[in-house]
Length: 278
Image 1: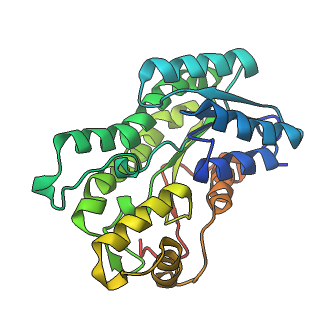
Image 2 (image 1 turned 90 degrees about the horizontal axis):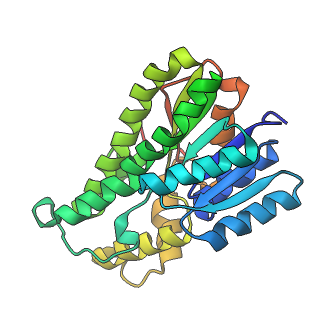
């Protein structure tokens, strides 16, 4: 197992893509700390990991809150004494959780912009600020940030997203990609690798909400169920014609976290079935 005796931390690790990442890290031999805003979800994935023979704990923390994430990291250090791998998975569209109706840039509220940047870019930065000092002290570490193909281009699978759906989200995810590049340069002298995975659309409960919104905003797709739209439009637009599942993202994370990627840093890789050209 390539990650045996390694300690991994996954933010937002209790569901969706985060669950896939957490389970794959455990399968690769790591002990995993699940940090999630929902204690029951965190505990549920931690229990799955413990049943597989690895150690795991579930902690509740809001990664956008510096004090909460710093306390969670202190608890992890008290339990495991080190952190070898950090996966910054917290993120998403605030429209998954709240109703915003602006259809153009001039209609998008300051509150929505602030919340989108906070949920994605700032959560990643704040968690790194909490963990990096420990990695610097031990002179080793692997950081994997989770961005999105939406941070590269407003076109995905040949479908141009409307500005209201992608603008603030895309800017926040693009910030994570640039942050990855710059942090990798700064931490290289401390033997810390920093890389990024940019997923395409992965079918999760949150993705279902997003898909429903897209159907509602496009008369062409009226009458389709969210799953039908996902299969006939999103998946069909990817050259591999293959559904991306959470464990696919987990596999990319495991690679970046392993010694196979010891000479790779400051890189971002798409996991999108070929949908994004860059």
